[in-house]
Amino acid sequence: MAVDLLLGLQWGDEGKGKIVDYLTKNYDIIARFQGGPNAGHTLEFDGIKHVLHTIPSGIFHENSINLVGNGVVIDPVIFKRELDNLAKFNLDLAAKLVISRKAHLILPTHRLLDAASEAAKGKAKIGSTLKGIGPTYMDKTGRNGIRVGDLELPTWKEKYRSLADKHEAMIKFYDVDVQYNLDELETEFFEAVKVLKSLQFIDSEEYLHQAQVNQKKILAEGAQGSLLDIDFGTYPFVTSSNTTAAGACTGLGIAPNKIKEVFGIFKAYTTRVGSGPFPTELFDEDGKRMAKVGNEFGATTGRPRRCGWLDLVALKYAVHVNGVTQLMMMKADVLSGFETIKVCTAYQYNDQLISHLPYSIEEEYVQPVYQSFKGWKQDLTKVSKENDLPKELMDYIEFLENELQVPIKIVSVGPDRTQTIIR
Ligand code: IMP
Image (cartoon, rainbow, N blue to C red):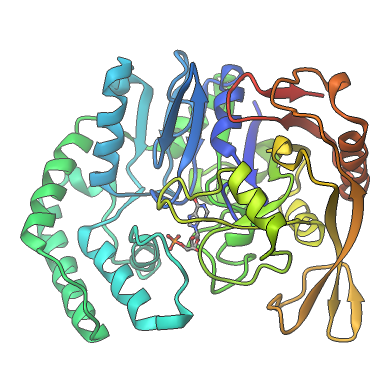
């Protein structure tokens, strides 16, 4: 039985949570494969908005199992908060939510290290969400990390102490002002670990193997976006995991030949939160309008997102790196009312016109070259059928499909589950 994969193709915040929630009815298992509580997956239904950080976006559906894979990093404190927020929904979390023993834990000192590292970088900071993601993946690849499975061993607290002590020494080394009370943070952490231990820990690669043998349908859920990938993103302004398709193999233990559909999610324009290059960024009224109408504020940090026109050069790159088989265009409704819609189709790179993503896309090297499209006035938020979409939007969609050579199967026209047009 094949596994389908769902990923963001830009700098995150494409609307993956909404689409996973929408697709969940077709799957038995929703499996998160990378990232941690730096993500904020927003779901809206029955007039209520939910933001999930670590828990997969299939959690609200009765029949799905939600699996947190080995590639994910878990902060027990944030995880507990997420569980507390779900308490009112009477979900059987002990049965519906399973966690890989090989997932790594974010310790309180990882968060402090993140803050110290960012403060020490000054103007060159990454713009991290400060959730401890970078330091935790550093300990993972440095072979020092603490994993969920360690919590079942009597020695884990010794391991914890020696790692936390090392982190404290490292924080001092940064020589920046990071205020903290470790006793308080640790009390909160150990309480949260107890709650985490009440859930089912599993050998998730074996669990997923058996699920495949038993013909279960699996959807792998990515977090962040392809341009934040540690290898293929705009390094160093990236996150610390592989957000691209290959990350689903290493983050779940799924073999590449088992992946069937790769759903690529993108916004009809582009946003980015945090630092780093963004060739199509707008600083004018158009950018402000996208931010306002699109309510472009980070779901995890509340920071305003930077906005700009769709960057087709970067989108093509993401489609290629991921092997996308179906596209989903989000937030088409936000572009209603613009006289002209622009798409960046090439870069002026030094003295050349190029149509691929070069090594550096900082503005001193790259200038976007735009193609313009006629905009539309119609409010799309009540449209439910493709035939009722304005001709100008259909022209835009067909142009993108032609350029990307991948069909756009879903057009989202609002945050609610119901505001989803299938083509
Ligand atoms: P970190 O992963 O928290 O260290 O953040 C590294 C970079 O990735 C920063 O620019 C963040 O703003 C960005 N980032 C991390 N997670 C997300 C996300 O879920 N959506 C959008 N940007 C993110």
